[in-house]
Image (cartoon, rainbow, N blue to C red):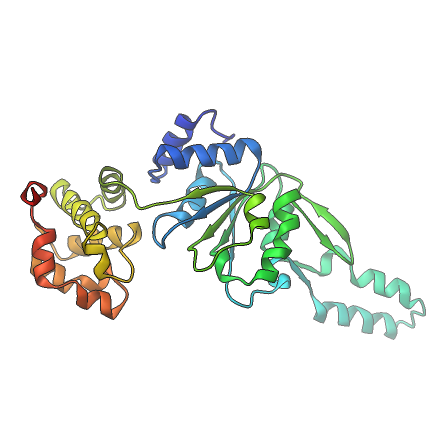
Length: 302
């Protein structure tokens, strides 16, 4: 489909594919689409940054191209590389045929058919309506890679020495995500629209759990949303290295359904703590006494 005509239309379209955005996030996405600017999403792990790119690809009927960043990521892994084996075979074949024009042979080996396209180049050359490019966890890459991205982010083009400048045939929708393990350079941020993606409020998390775990009863889904929401709040959040994200809420709800749980109690919390948390210290910090406090009705805190 074409880009949604309004923020409300985008909110509804995202909800139709199972992504429940708040209005601030939908506004940021809408502007990124209208202004054809990259969107940088920062936030804690598990709050839905990567899932947004997947949902957008469905909403816009565009292919999703993902560049997963990591320490030591090189340009050739992100943009392109040459098929050296095929190039070598071509050169040997030319020598075997007695070709004397080596300059011509060199030109031939840098033809399009020997080019291996990586995510950035794939996104630039995607046919209309274009692709959704997810540059995931860009904070895990190093600073030279950030500098390399600037041409793409600012002008939707890249320079390949053997070919020249490659410009986007259809402007890609570009989403960058960061867990903020380090600060990104200002030059990257200036080329993007920015949004901090926080944990959802209880009602939105409840809607997500219901949509993603249809087998959960209304009461169980509500208990999951309330429990995890309180787990992230003070003073409980101080006891953990990292609070559970939306992904953990959904996974926990699925586990509770698999265990035929009707009502969450402290024993169930203790038995399934390894789904909510991925660190041994965090699992240990979720004590039975804390679970009892977290499971109390909201009006009991008054």
